[in-house]
Image (cartoon, rainbow, N blue to C red):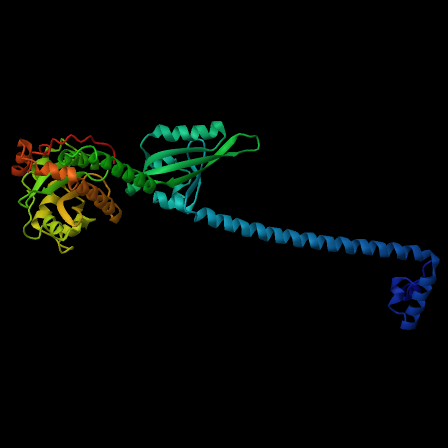
Length: 409
């Protein structure tokens, strides 16, 4: 019996058991397979095996197709996420996510650049601790409206950002709703509109100056009002000098951002305008072209090639950080010079401000050269006119007493 089990055994159906298959010859295996095919009891089993095999193969193909679709979808999602991250981080607008307390939860690279801080340093900090708001209540009210009204809120704010000084920003916040419908966070965009505000200010300045210059033929009085208009919108110090009939410069008006600053007023008093030498005023009158010093340090160190004792004395007198000397020219004739200086604010003059000052000076010159103004000059000298031609301060407010109202720059 043991020997028979070693050689394999025969099942009740007459088929060899698996141990016997290994010792069967090829012919015996073929014969056995033919017997199995002819057995009617195994015919249904074969059909069921084929059906199961087909179903398993179909499921395998379906699973492989589904797996491939999932891989493609994951790749698309990853690619979309990468594109979104790139658009979010490098968008030209500063984006950050704030909670109800105004604490920064997320921030893009543009926001970090706007604040001048590393993005990791921003996360978890209050927005109000990073920027100074001219009116803190405006920021608190903005966030409160976004969280309570559950709608888009847009507010204009004036913020002080690091070393940049004050800037005008449009702050737009959109609520992020949770599963329960409550506002969990708000997505906030901060858009710097300082350039737009600057353009609006410049246009209003020119429009108001044109209105003043067209109000009467008394250009001297009009010129005083225009000088007052430039401070502090365009300058902290404005000095206007006009040529009289003998061809000498006479000071018409001096306006200071701080009319009570007697120290600056007293320092400017002895600085009478001169047309001799290489003083900036003389160069502007002779050439009819403006001179711009964006940084007065270059002028004081002689780096511009136009450093003169007169210019240095003016800069020291008013503590100027940036200066423009602009000719008052119309029809090719220079009739005076407008000197504009920044001394108290953190602004600096650029070619943009120079173009504005030239436009303003041209309007002044056209008012002076208008037929009505010419008739006014040809009339016999009135006491005021004679005083203007003999004294450089008659038509200007006394030094240090210019009635200029100071507003935030």
